[in-house]
Image (tube, rainbow, N blue to C red; front, side, top):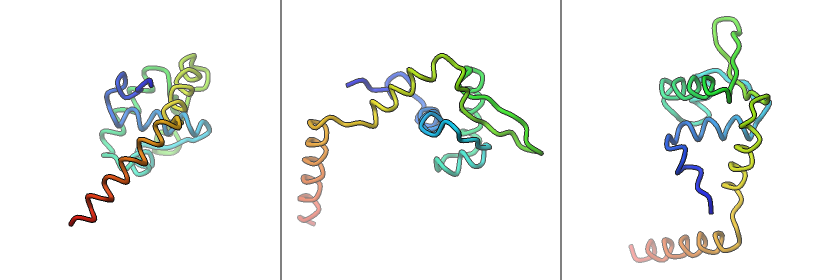
Length: 112
């Protein structure tokens, strides 16, 4: 299975990208984005600006804040959307493996 985290090595960047791609009409400021992701605001700001510079996000000033949203006109949005949704859909074999791991951890917790 393809691992998107292998090419987007920043967990925060991947989380920001996933947040906006899975919610294409979402418009958030830095603090709201950081709060939704339980991330450091400075790190969230850095990743938002990087994604804006890359053309994946757009921004607009509202009063004294900057609001970020997905730039649907970017050619990379559709393929990234597919990749992100592939990550969130598990095959039956992966689900069975996850269930097996949960069972093992439950068994180990019983020993305590």
